[in-house]
Image (cartoon, rainbow, N blue to C red; front, side):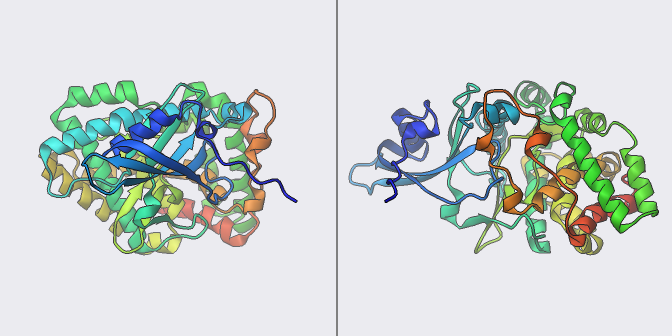
Length: 423
């Protein structure tokens, strides 16, 4: 007879996740204190949270008004992995620190600025963070559980339709508008914010030894797809020319080159980080561990090349760009800035020519990842010891098995070439 599974404890989340933390969550949700809690089991697809461990917890809280019904708070908590080798392999501490800074400092500043400007349709597509803690070992982030409100993710393996893509692009445009308006109206406040509270967690000279070997595997996978599907073609020649540099250094350049158009980026714009409402057009954006300060086109190109099909791009790429810019311009006006001066469509076009190749650099990782079967995703807690393991030894990326997968990768480059982004 199987031994019953022990009930989860708060310390399973983090030794710093205590009853005081529960009281803080309840207070953040509008209650007085926590009077009960339960950690729920739920299924998570392997690979959905390789930087984190995740939990769902339901809290009962004492209301602030006497005689009112008890408060129920459903929270989604992600914590830094307990497995030290896993934590060090994926540099989880860096990603948690960046995301916690985003919620605790950056987003509060952006929302504070927005609240003072009182736009008719404020940006509120980011789920509420109740409490977050970071020390590099016991980190956690407790968010409102968006599932209770009818939000869910789309399949990462299947492309999504036009309307969902338009929803994502409008949300990105409005998110970027907050940065542009704050930078326009309070430049010192904005630059202090990005200088001290936003860090590059993926592409930086100091991180090259961590990631570069894995990038070489991605290049090999792409070259294999090109050789099998379009040998001797102009597309193959142009892609090889794009690769004929130190691609990691080029991605560092793209993420660190800034100008008057640069904004706070989400940084990880693939489909698992967008949640769609089942009965409305609302969308929510999650997971800001790769938040960065750079061209808005880094978010746009990552999303377009990782999340849309070639057929959708050929028919509606301009529509996607116009949805993005239209929503951005509308919120800019409501915040008190002039989009024709701050970020006209002509500037977006220039940024795309300069920076949209970034989406190809991200796509050679995100597209093969999105096509992995669950059986191909490693069990990260089998990493033993405390030392970091080279990530190319953990994430085993092999040549794409299907023609459809290979063409999805190649079509990304076809589109970029047709737009002049790889010139």
